[in-house]
Each structure stands twice: as structure tokens, then as C-alpha cells.
Length: 63
Image: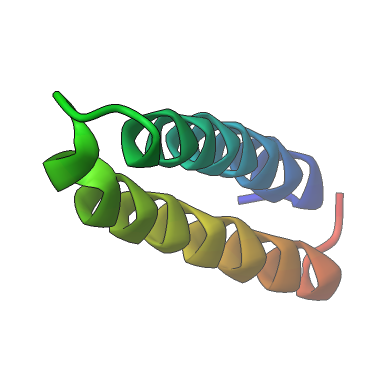
């Protein structure tokens, strides 16, 4: 894996985290979806962790 590949993975994971955070925010304000808030937030946190891991990996790799 190259630095560029790791950064691409980091960006994609960050985008998923952002999407899930938005879903969690919508769910918290919706009576029909309120019960899904924790799941969206947990999934978003996991993807944010993946993004941070790829970012750290990219810092160690060469292009």
C-alpha cells in the first residue's frame, strides 16, 4: 500500500463517518428513528477510527 492509497482509504472512511453522523443527528430528532441513534453514532465512530488509522499509516508510508 502506498501513501496515496492509504489517504484515499482515509478519505473514504471519513466520508462514511460523516454520513453516519448526519444519520445519527436526523435519527435523534425523529420519533420513528430515534431508537437507531446509538447504532448510527457507533458506526460513525468506527469509521472515524478507520480513517484515523489509515491517516496514521499514510504518515509512515512512501508514495
